[in-house]
Length: 198
Image (cartoon, rainbow, N blue to C red; front, top):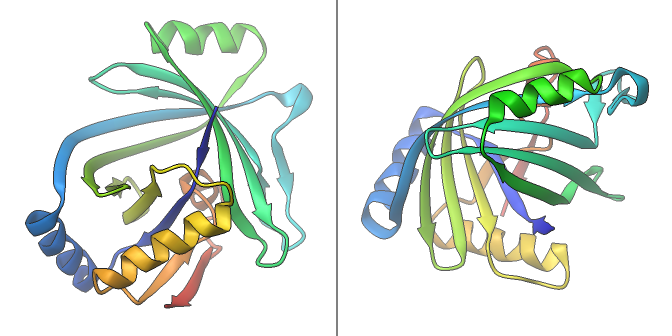
């Protein structure tokens, strides 16, 4: 299991240009890759629920990802900050599979249904202890994710390290996405962005 601590926010044209300039000068470009991701649900024990605010939500996500570099099968279990009411980190259980299509067929035989397809082009960079990705997501837009790759005992410490990194590269104001791409696709009328000023 991997504890995933990351920050995600949407990029407008100005911020996208600023980030690209910094990445090209300072970070190492690792890969550019297309992802087709199938998020599954079990109708007999659904991951889905309606949040008190009225939108469709989940805390656990079961995903099969297809890429040119190989396929994978993953369960993500999100843990929420009780005060800020947003995901703090997630436990990620991910394994490579030899055939994503067969894995998808197997899960469907077991009763899981294909719930949501997320398609994106991902540019991956590394800098110090951070992985930085720029995602161009079909029907959603362009997003930046910064994930801490160093181990920390406390998720809030990890988030603060990410925020310090963002400040160091000149990003002091952004709209933090408090839900993932699936939740955004499920609820196109709902804005999950939260203004953050560092």
